Length: 383
Ligand SMILES: *Cc1c(COP(=O)(O)O)cnc(C)c1O
Image (cartoon, rainbow, N blue to C red):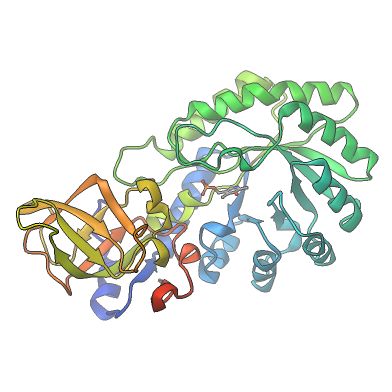
């Protein structure tokens, strides 16, 4: 689907519905296409959808019907999945930072698989989810990612090895390692670097009698925003050959945890222009203030990390354009969306014009505040 030209279903929805406040519309069929593309690019991988990317019930139910498993970050996400009839055996508790009572509650609900990256967290799991499956998150290089998950998660491979052997002593079952190369990772070679760092761990632990059955490659698969990104099938081919290179005939069972790549391009936000102005009469660049900003769903515009394609309803996007600075409506100067990265919008743009922000299905509704300055949270419809 090329940017700006919507499919018939979305066209019909927008023709029949108008919104006073910014609204996200998710095309569930596109979610399905994205899931199936990932599944065919990595046919041997088990897919755990990262619930945090977009936890709309309709999305989770559609993915459940397609055979997806789910990676949850909190007890609330776990309960949401369970309430939709997703079996506990298909849900992992993938956050390495959990309250012990959340672990106990997840265990009570039958969750069997827990992530950790520290000795202290392992002790919590051993106490409150005895006999469970555990996997250790390893710290890897996230450079090249537009939204790096950086150094907050994971431990060194050496520490991972120690902790995984300790987990056995604690009565737990170590299943493998996980890593995340950073979200919107367009440098595919980062996976190869990570695999190069950890393959030896599998061999070393096997020599100690601990056979790790799985390897979790995390998320990071991209959504196509403005820049050209490699296709999901290219990621699949690259990862398959990298796994073969490092593990030969002993490739563990592969898990991936995609979030953005499943829902990103399935969503479009329709919002409104509130004000078009200049700071100086001679300024070429106009300031365009929208009714949506950093605090109402577009948090990934911080540092202009994610550059969403933007179109104006009913206007050409290739003629009579001029440069703009885009900003949100709140009384906080952080609430500027794009200033360095140049967007060109129609010269006759005016308050009340409807604007569409494309590929906004991931990390928008969940990132919107509940009412900063009295602006409402981002609502959504799944169609
Ligand atoms: C956020 C997250 C994901 C999803 O990452 P994407 O880049 O959106 O695919 C997967 N796994 C874990 C542990 C995460 O925290």
